[in-house]
Amino acid sequence: MKIKKKIVLIGMMGSGKSTIGALLSKKMNMKFIDVDSKIETIEKQTISQIFKLKGEKYFRGIEVETILSMLNSKEKELVLSLGGGSFLDEKVRKNVKNNSLSFWLNWKPSTIIKRIRKSSKRPLIQGLNDQEIEKMMLERNKYYAKSNFKIDCENQKKNEIVDKIISIVKENEIKS
Ligand code: S3P
Image (cartoon, rainbow, N blue to C red; front, top):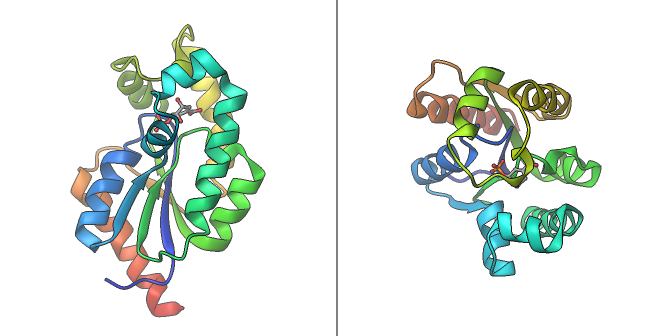
């Protein structure tokens, strides 16, 4: 499918941005870039190592730089999945708004907590209890709500989420 804008997936850690992004790009015959993986390739370190060795501030700088360069690239047929904290940055939000159709993959806190507890890849939640993660999530939801479309993912199969996004993209292509 030829579309005029990039597609950006946002949402909390564990919301399935990478999985859904990969499936979506395959189905739409578009290129997929997972920003966290891209940063790991650029830095030759895992996200956890970057946090540990260089700190969160350094990570956020690289994150913004990487996202802006992807969003401003000439490539149109691109699906990007952003790290969960990146949409809190105003520059990122503004660029996402101007250069893409953005989708927030929304889940209830208990689902997200269960999912992210299973993995040790997320330095930001190490040492946080469930209430603290929920608080972080609710604060972030205010920013995620600034995306173009909210996709309620609870009780939806991966393919249903992908198809929902595709139908919204198609609708918007017709309008534009
Ligand atoms: C972060 C989310 C992670 C990663 C980093 C920080 C966050 O990405 O960028 O650990 O602040 O929410 P995912 O959302 O892909 O887990």
